[in-house]
Structures are given as C-alpha cells and as structure tokens.
Image (cartoon, rainbow, N blue to C red; front, side):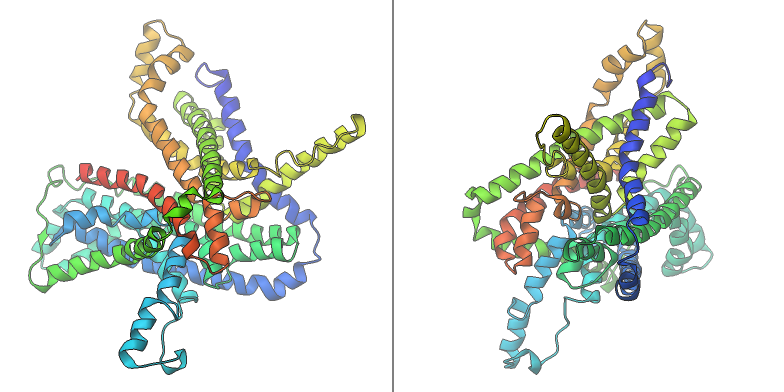
Length: 544
C-alpha cells in the first residue's frame, strides 16, 4: 500500500518492469545467443569500436567543458556587450539534433561547398590535391559537431551554479590579491564541480546514443557497430553482445552522475543571502569584445550554421510540404510522439505520486530503476524491445495457428508500437523528473488540509493535486513529444517496412547524399525542437 492508494505500488512496479524488460532481454540474448560471432567481434570490431567510442566521449567531454564552463562564467559573472542576448541564445544549439548538424556541416565543408569553392576561386586552385583542407568526415569532425550541439548541457548546469555562488567568495579572494583568472580556476570552478559532472554525464550519454552523425562522418563507434552487426551482418546475438558492453559504459556514467548529485547539495547553497544581485565584473577594452566573441562563436557553430544551411535548402523546396511522403512521415511522427508522451506522463505521474505518498523502500527502488532507460542508447534499446515483442508475436501466432487455424503475423514488433515502447522507456525519466519537480512545489499540507475537510486520498488526487499539477504535466508531455520527434537511433532500427518518421526520412535522404531533399523535414524537426529551448531561455531570464 502507498499512502492509502493500493494501486500506486503496483503502478510503480509496473513502470519499473516496463523499463527493465528490454535490458533483461539484451543480457539474456547475449548469453543465450552463442559465441559464433564472438571471435570476429573480439578481433575486428569491439577493440577498435571501444577505443573510438572512449576517445570520442573524452574529446567531446573536454570540448564541451571548455565551451560550457567558459561561457557560463562569462554571462554569470561578467558584464560585456550583448551579454543578456547571448545568455539566452547560448541554449539554442539544443534545438539541433547532432545528425542534422552533421549533415549541414557536411554540405558546408564538402569539395563543392561554399568554403572550398571560395578557396579555389581566391587562390586559383583547380583540384583538391592543390591545397589542404580539414576533412569533416573524421573523428575530429565528429568532436566538433557533437560538442557544438551538446555544450548547453554543461552551460546550463554551470550557469545556475555560478549564479548561486554569488560574488562573496570571489570578492574575498580578490581582497587577498588573487587575479580574476585565478579566482575562476581556483575558487569558482571547484565549487561548481558537482554541476559540471552532472552536465558532463549527460553529454557522454548523448554522445554514446548518437548514430546518425557518427555514421555520416565515418566514425565507427559501439553504437554504429550494433547497427552494422544486426542489420548488415544479420547477427542479433552479436549485436546484443556489443550492447552489453555499452551497458557497462551506461552504468559507469550513471554512477558518476549519482555521486555528483549527492555531493551537489553541499555546494549549491549561496555563500550569502545578499549576493544574488551582486555587481558583475565589468570588462573593458579588448577583453569585453573577446568575451562577446567567445560567447558568439558557439552559437554560430551549434545553431546558426545548421539552421542557415538547412533553412536555405528548405526555402527552395517548400513545395515538398504537400508531398504525400512528407505528410505521411509527419503524421507518423506525431502519432508516435503523442502516444509516447501520453504513456510517459501517465507512468511518470504514478512514479512521482507514489514517491510523494509513500516512503516505501520498494517504491524508492522502483523509481530509481525506472530512471535507467534514459541512459541506455537507442540502438541498445532497439534490441531489447524487439526481442520480447517478437517473442510475444510468435507465441500468439503459434497458439492461434494451432487452435484456430489462422496466422496473426506481427502484432507488435511489426508496427509503430515498437518505436513507441522504445521512446517510452528512454524518455520516462524526463517526464517523471518534470512531474516530480511540480510536486515539490506543492506543500504536503495541501493533502492534509483536503483530508481534514473529508476528502479521501483518491478525491484529493483528482480534485486538488491534478488540477494544480496541470502545468507540470503539460511541460513533461511537451518535452517527451519533442524528444520523440527527434529520436533516430531506436527508430531507424525498429521501424516497420514502409514506415517513416521525419527523422528516418531525413536519414534516408542523407544516406543517399540528398541532404537538400531532406531539408524541409529537417527544418520541421528543428523548429519543433526550438519550443522547449525558447521556454528554457525565458526561464533563464526570469531566474536572472
């Protein structure tokens, strides 16, 4: 029982089971699948893919830390031209999925693109052998693209932490003779270390999840190796074995994040109650323009370049908005995203309300286990989702063949339900977090007051809490809807025949070197993704 609601504990356990079934299926499939492909994988695939994955995560983490920490400190602690606008605009790259950024940069830096064409025009070169130009389709290119769209995770965490620190600690250090740079490196960055670790964990998880960008850029990571082993080599067991290696990465990252979050409560208090509106460090001379440039460059790389390249292509192809293929992909995206949003909100509400109503250890464990899904890459989830759904379909088909003489075919695994299931597992944590944050703003005394006025637990929930929780629930649904619209890694592996979402439609066109024809669908994804980014920017302004 959970606070007088018998169904809450059952609902929390059900939500936990929905998340754990794919993960258990992956482990079972890897163990029971045999070792026929293991010699090939261990000799030719896993060592190289693991090394590339670790190198990509480390390099991307370093780049995002450099950009995110620096820009967060500048806008939180310094005053320079354009600071208020740049403070909000630095969040814009979150609207650009990494695979769309990769396609845009590929078009910009290709041999026939505007940059190389200008170089050949200015210097009279005729072929690519006449000059050197960096290859965007490389590990360095992947680091550039991923870091340019992922740095806002660290920027947001660090900006909040720097604002909460205030200026007191920095001012004390300055009175003792420390320079602003030394104060930043020795005082403010160490105090923000827990927030940095949380943001860095999110960056690593998103890097691990990406498949569209790394495949387009020719970087063989573990994520791409799962895709290649399953679909190109036809070995589901081999893909599951690689997926288990990725699960080790995920568990390690989640442990790091959990430790950082536990430490954060000791570092998140303001140093004094009077420093919230403290005067920022006023930059003068060349320093103020360097600060403006340092905050503008990430926006150009992470948002302006992809938006302008894809937007230019899209404006020339607006007639595609009426093409049946695009409209069908749009409807499929809306159907999948809306259903996933509904399911995650219901399950997230059950988990959050169960945690509010009961201190049961079982419910606490169920809530924590339910958060694992977000850290599992989409390609790994795809394997875990397909295996149990296919088993269910085959079981039902066998029973009906035997007793009714009919074949049901693929009821779940051959439909969009598989994609919805994967999105629900992956984004459940996002919905639960938003709803839990909404519950935290409601005093427990509301429940007590309603009970003293004669309401039972169910009546209190429906007549008091749910109406007051409507903004948090809508925000959670919106976030999951938009993230599901952008999801590619699981969708590309689970989609049925002749079933496209906007993300897979863009992926198909880009795989055929037709990025221009994918631009309209890509811009719909970008414009949709800008909705939560704008909301975040507005909340930053209010927080200021």
